[in-house]
Image (tube, rainbow, N blue to C red; front, side):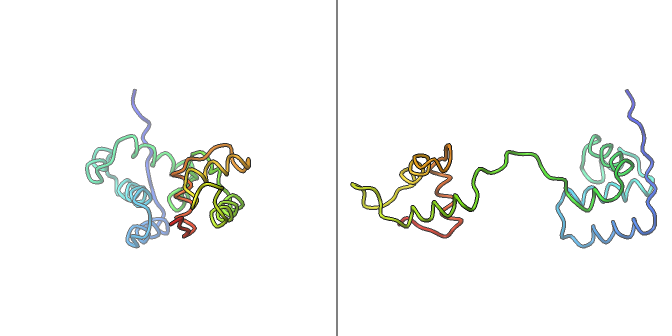
Length: 147
């Protein structure tokens, strides 16, 4: 099965915008690669030449060219949100964790441990489950120390 060829013909303003985008170097590597793919395609380079020049893959080059035709230049300038599970941790939970960590430890313990904190958060039904390592990460993010 042969892929449909998407001919790229950038307007002068788009070409200038992409050239400046690449030159700035303050973008993600993916975004800069997308811009370079379009610039090379605009010069009349074949898919194989673009793949070789950018050390990219054919599907990537085809996909970028197609998306430019379908969506325009805007997809280069901004990233779509990435998939992934949203965080269960909100600022309210972080506040509760900090409050517990700064309070007196349970009887029989001289100080809070990460496991004790994780268990306390679950016991208080603030969160369904959380690992002690994640509690440590949260404390580190908040610049709190148990030691």
